[in-house]
Image 1 (cartoon, protein in one colour):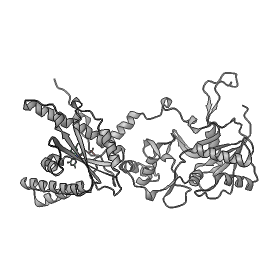
Image 2: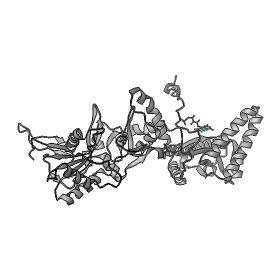
Image 3: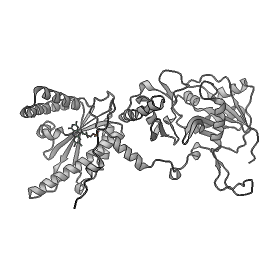
Image 4: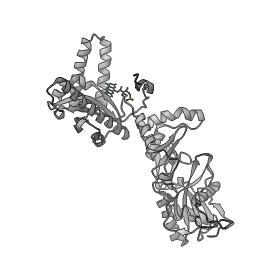
Length: 470
Ligand SMILES: Cc1cc2nc3c(=O)[nH]c(=O)nc-3n(C[C@H](O)[C@H](O)[C@H](O)COP(=O)(O)O)c2cc1C
């Protein structure tokens, strides 16, 4: 392929503010005419992502987003650093929108760098607040930018009969270098990569590894004309770049395989962070409805916990907000009150404690009761081994409880483990008519959070690893 020595980059002036449902190819044709131009074979049209997103309705209103526990915590963790750097502060709603658009958080410090569902690594999952009309409205990257590029290329081909290429671009920051540059996020008609391997250099040596990111270079060049702020030139015509037209193109071919990407955070790091961020949520829950199915899906995961001689002694009872739960909590509170009076606690203390428990258990959208089914425990004639067997049963169901808490966290549901059922065994068994061999062990309150929760202090590693002194 011969490279030309002159390439023209022409911004199309007079593009109107794009609204949902607008016909972008028709707008391009009209803009070309108004600029005294007509498409030619081999032209490349570079289109800013914002107008594609607006035209297909890929927008969201921050005012309609309810942030999850994860979003609240993440927002909390990055906020002070944002302030220190003098960068715009993120709201939990924006953080939630970013999470919704992302497969993975790659870095969260003064900015949020995520891997989008397409596999792009960029700040804020490519969400844009600028150049969008309307309070709280943000644009999201198109779900399938290649498809959007192709639709426009085919429409333009139909209207003009010219074989051209289309690139959808966004402005991305880069690792190691300051300054955002135009980057291709969707292509049609042009391969993202110009493969120079096997070609010869000036001295006749065969090129071994040279792959040129041609669509990113073109998007970056177009960006110089588009500008970033209020220039209002979201469509650029590039003329004179010599490329091989191809119908089968996808931006995916420019994304480095994870296996050979040296800068990827590995899965272990992601899991470690996830384990550290689970919190016990003891605050009021959001009014957002919780789907019982998602609770059942979490219990499905809790089945996979390890258990002594694979006894799987755990039994889960899902208590919804109904009369049964109400009367159960009221009975449990009578017992709590009685126990505390016996302990000689003050009336004020008792009132506070009872009120707190009542609120926790009555107001959570779901309350899960965990029981141990003792019928699967080994039977021993002596009390020592019976006690050990009981303990290993409790240890086993605790591991299932941890799986449950982690899967709830994964579902963005907040939860807390309460041991109250241990103190009201008979009341619970009678009230819920449980099988004789069930022992109530724990409650889990479950719902969507409204606030972030700080991590309680952990003991130092030195304090929990006991060094033998022998
Ligand atoms: C076996 C067990 C019983 C618990 N019981 C209660 C409880 O009765 N009331 C309560 O407020 N929190 C209870 N918790 C939650 C702990 O307070 C919480 O896990 C701990 O403070 C650490 O916080 P984190 O889970 O956010 O890391 C319980 C946790 C476990 C593992």
